[in-house]
Image (cartoon, rainbow, N blue to C red):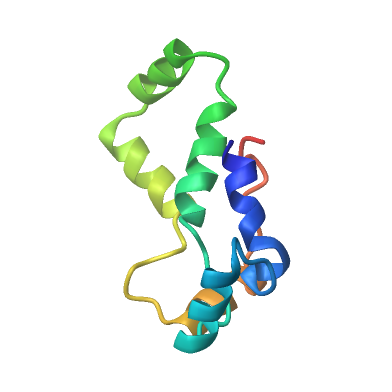
Length: 102
């Protein structure tokens, strides 16, 4: 379901519209592209990689507060105060950590 929801961001979210109303509103408002909860969807796909709820809970329980903070520092690159230009630069200039769950 998550992958299907992200299908509306095909071609960087520039060309695929859900319906004619959305197309006209994007045009009217000057919205060139969108990101419908991309980070939420990415998180859900990471969670999906765990074979069971119990394995996810066990993974989280093995992490100390310091470990969770270090993991956040290692993985988080998108922040609320970033401009669109900063986000685009991060997207094009950084690579995903090699050990990310697929």
